[in-house]
Image (cartoon, rainbow, N blue to C red; front, top):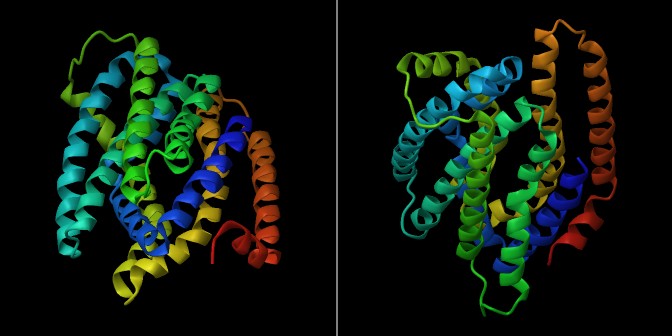
Length: 312
């Protein structure tokens, strides 16, 4: 929590916010809409496999050696399907030119993020929370350095949104690579021995998680796409909306940290027949206290916050 409290606000309000102020609401609004569009189909990259894997490995770590190569192959196949499907729907949605140019690296970013989250699910399932904390902030640390250098290092005369997206590709790819090396070290598998029955089982048992993720992703992300597509000045309006949505994203990041840590803890406690209600109420109280504090503060100081963060 401390690592994320230190790094992620610095990235969100120091780097991401500055990028929007630099390129303008219209350009950032297009990026925001395309980013949300890529997330709408994220379920095809994962199918609930990460959550299923986290629970399963937390209960039986011996499966790691068998599961890792099969999961990697499955996710590679899903990544191909994801890229083909989203380009098809992008074409139906009327994306062309600059929009498609930005969309491809954004899709590649989602592929890297998907693999990174999967590798992290193995680390948390093994209760290696120090490594998990390192991986959870590594991509943001890289982006702070790279994008910060581009913004303030006077190496480019005119900062473009493409630079931000390509920096993300590098950061997410590097994080996924390090996550793979850590997972391989603990899984100790020597090759990719594919077992079709295991892959079928993985996909079948991950389906309930996939349904939940799909519904929540649509609920959280479709608004940015609709603003950009439906309004006459959609790109600018989506950029304005993104300015406030950034605050929600920042707050949600900490709730997600709780989820990543609690799921393997609950899974192991249930397997060992330990009572979980004490941990449930303790975590609920902490999350609600933070949520109410942030909500009330943001409501009563909404105008000063926006004027402080963004240029007119």
